[in-house]
Length: 239
Ligand SMILES: Cc1cc2nc3c(=O)[nH]c(=O)nc-3n(C[C@H](O)[C@H](O)[C@H](O)COP(=O)(O)OP(=O)(O)OC[C@H]3O[C@@H](n4cnc5c(N)ncnc54)[C@H](O)[C@@H]3O)c2cc1C
Image 1: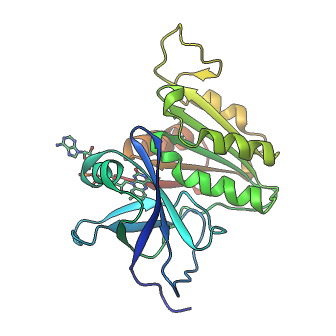
Image 2 (image 1 turned 180 degrees about the horizontal axis):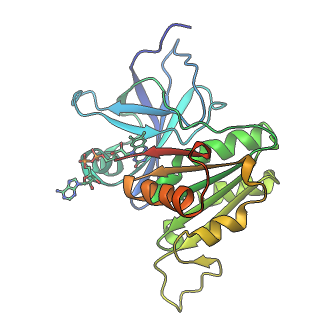
Image 3 (image 1 turned 30 degrees about the vertical axis):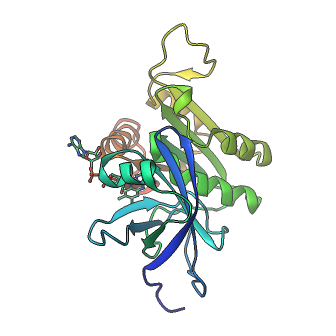
């Protein structure tokens, strides 16, 4: 299979997930048949600004053929342009999928996936692939958001939980007022909450993705504070 070159792709749909988060679905051009894995990221740019490129994790999975999806937060120059202006019918240039943030889909493994805000994007791909392949790999997502209005992909994750008995989607809200009616967990992701998910530490792999401060904080919490071997930690830093 020859290496895949950057290709101009049509934005087939541009879906506002939240007021500041948009998913772009890039239709592959004819003859484009990449080999790639769930958890890879792509680098994209606008045809009129070829020197300004940004990386985005695939929020779709490797079983989704014919298109890539990425989900972008409105932040900075590219993030703002995408969320405010990208629309169906536009074109962007998309580089080949690459990366090492790959789910260890083995039957006895438990993947504990820790995310805050837009760091959830690659975990939709993990959960989609596991559900469609009916895998026995346990996946627990621990997701921190300010309020329940900030949960990205809530309905798809709830649907995937219904389809896959090995998948759990846990949310904690950090900025609710005491009188807000949320019945789920409140407060930051801490060692206590992570430990509650672990049933067999030696077969558990921890994933964390997102802005550097969140990823480094989680790395410290899991490796330094909880004593988990570094080899069981997979990180994707965005900054
Ligand atoms: C492997 C990988 C995967 C990624 N996946 C995703 C993903 O799935 N979704 C996603 O949304 N992002 C993702 N990112 C981040 C993404 O690549 C960009 O970094 C992000 O969209 C911001 O780029 P930008 O050009 O818009 O920001 P820039 O304009 O370069 O700004 C960078 C940062 O500085 C801040 N900033 C800019 N100007 C100012 C200012 N004047 N004052 C204060 N702060 C300022 C911005 O808010 C931003 O946080 C990923 C990054 C990597 C490396």
